[in-house]
Image 1 (spheres, rainbow, N blue to C red):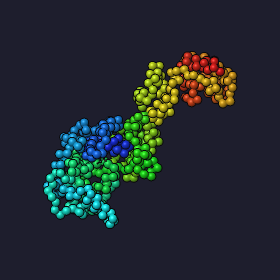
Image 2: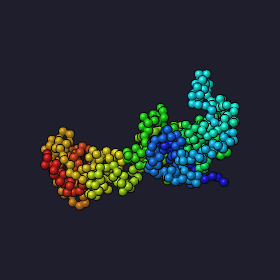
Image 3: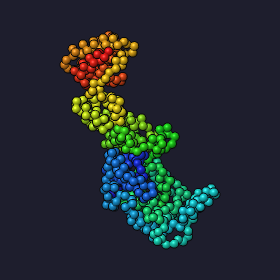
Image 4: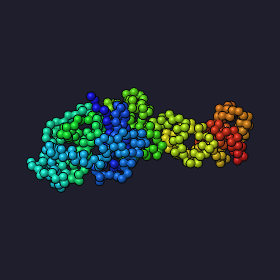
Length: 480
Ligand code: GLU
């Protein structure tokens, strides 16, 4: 019988979640969903000195925003108990005691100073430093106050398979007696994650390549504890856009929740993260979560580094924004518009007409917020103050401009029903072609928006309606 698939995301609570950890979480989540399995969030807080208060809440908020809902996690203990490692100390101690009793662990005889001295000596002699080469023949009994080290008993070549990288191996120099339990009673990551993965039935370990070097040690531990190896799924590093190095904080690796503030959609973020190190083998680039779950395959995760490209993320976000219904789009837009714009576009029931214009120009909802702050949506609900000089097309005089606007006014007064962008266009188009489009449409547009840049005058006229359009053109004629 095959085991049910279980994956976990196992962050340390040491600060915010960046692109790399969010991608690991996504891959683990999607793979579990695809296989009808279980996804666990486990908090690895065994290094209390590195802990940043509030990190667990932050991690939960990030997963919540991305929709990566866990089956078991900090707020949902499993049959094995808590999913927060600091609340599982007795489990690690029991496993460590088991190894000690079997002669597979021994009290660490070294102080930090002694180890530093041995390491320095090895470095001076240009040979690799291995603790096991200094392992004492006899050890004092372990009274629980000292750190405990794992004892390697077989020094053969390690061979394993990674679902992404294929067959891997390392010589015995990769094996060393590592600390499993520290003197303070906390386990090391190297030990705790293995004990937990076994207790939680984890079948697939999805994580970064920084753990490959230690895998030979882990393999020895699986054997010593008599537990089956999980499938190792090593995700590729995330590189700077120019691929010169790993993406770091200075290169723009930021808190994933910053993207929410900037007006990205979680579905776009998931889509982008999925493609950062995986491809479906087709040309498809825009995926819903359901499509990701159907199509994702750990066998198609890339081995080589994936370059982070914010422009691509924006493009994907734009694609997902286009897919939103007008209602949903407006709901998102409301979060980044000023309260005044929201109230006015809502009150005048203009939002549904403005949403298509918002869609045209924005890659994120943050863009829409920025345009709003520049006054981009104000002229739909408020008569603009128009400067006469702005009304004139290149090199045109004010009297000539006024003549054209008066002509436009006359033409528009003849448009009764229906009043729409199309009927307004039909009414003035021939005249604009005859007199020059710039000469006619520029002052018309500025009269309606008060701005150098805006959608074309037909669209604005269609939205603000007949009376307001005629009033604004009359007002422009008066100032000229
Ligand atoms: N706590 C480890 C980290 O944050 C997790 C590694 C793993 O997934 O096993 O890097």
